[in-house]
Length: 93
Image 1 (cartoon, helix red, strand yellow):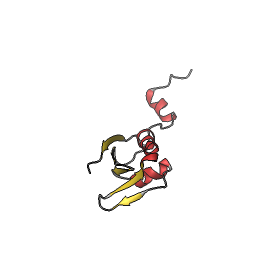
Image 2 (tube, rainbow, N blue to C red):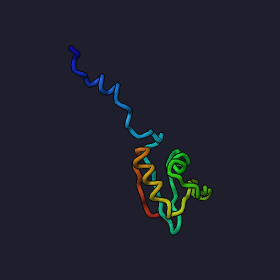
Image 3 (tube, helix red, strand yellow):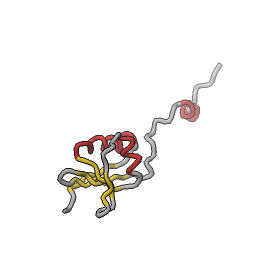
Image 4 (cartoon, rainbow, N blue to C red):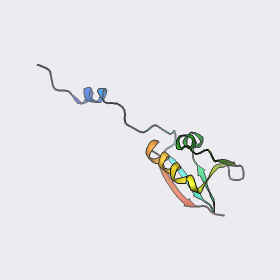
């Protein structure tokens, strides 16, 4: 007769369903007129994962910027695929 499975046995057999670690738990998005500034670590891999190819590095602010038309893709990838906490604020001009 087989013994009932224990929690450790079940955990070893189930695949890992946790989101991939982004290396940084937060992402700050500052909305401007036509662009959004992304502040956080590992932004380029996030943009690649979201499929965003239109991007520009803003040297004046020291961050990556993307058009507002693709920001929902970035937020979705950050929150659901990478498990980040996303904060969206209006940029101070």
